[in-house]
Image (cartoon, rainbow, N blue to C red; front, side, top):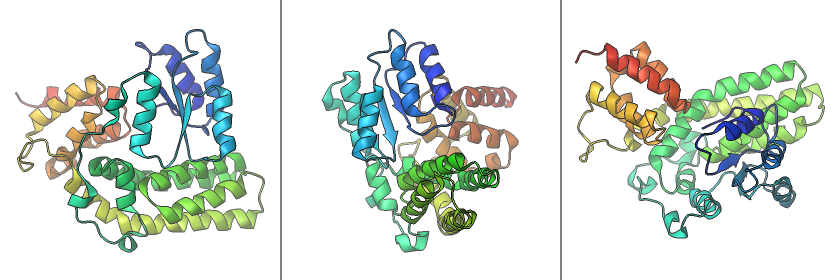
Length: 315
């Protein structure tokens, strides 16, 4: 489950049934930051030992100590190595360490990647390596990042116009972490600089210049990497058939997807990929709504949409 802010996260932890095995906690969130959210959780009887793992782009020793002082179990910096995160989760949830062996996945080595200079400096190979070689997962992350980038920048601009500098700084912090995760090195650096400078009341000219640089780099990245990312997502998609070539019939594909959605199984993301390549589906309003819900990990809504669509299809 994902929470949009710290207050929602605390409520989700308290209301979860069955209870969560672990919580991944961001430090900078709207409404309530991660340190405060962790303290609230620790105050509640029965939640003193719940594993809470900080995930943040702040990696200074003081940041790590602040996490531990607030009651967090450990700290994983962004961009994180998947193996490190898995190991932390297994360790704090009491699972055997042997389970940290990641399953074999589609490797960046098996997919022809262009030079990073052709993709606006996007370090694809390094980003996939951090994800344990899982190219399909990276492809979904990259496509979602590029899709949401304009909206993210527009929100930052609205905060700037309102002179809400803490909100602008938080927006740059979030962008910094996301850019690092997908391997957008220059955008990450520009967002980090903007985050620091805009965290206090800045000169208007400086603020405009910093945000203009971030927006320019983001625009270049989308222009250069966007068209490639769509094709890469299809090429990297995990096949639903053993031979990787059989087309997925609409009904059977939706039925399999619905089963995963109802179980909150992340394999739903893999099942969605073969369906994305069907031009007939992509022209339908139902598909666009379903795709948006799954990409946002809103599995409850996605399951409802999927069931409604299946009910409309002829038997």
